[in-house]
Length: 124
Image 1: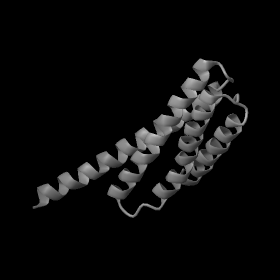
Image 2: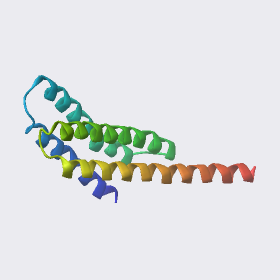
Image 3: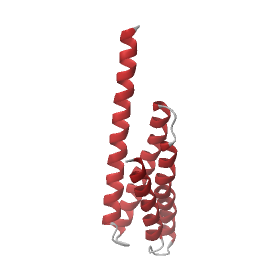
């Protein structure tokens, strides 16, 4: 699953860059493009850092960054969609799916960490 998400987040980054190159060259679109490319490419880059986590706490911390970047990408894609600059439905769908995966991963690891803490408390 980890390698599949690495590939998927990298493809998302490339798709965001490809989209940016299709957007109009106006003052407002350049701002949106800059923000979208920064957040969209950060998803994959930061997910790679998640994969190198050495503890549950480090995983949670790094995954929260990935989730923030993914959510921000959704926001900027929604702006592009509402402006009608280009069709971003497929990319927005992917951004939302990735966000859902990251939310689910965070919930799972937080529950696991809480269960470990609760078991350790009961043992003392």
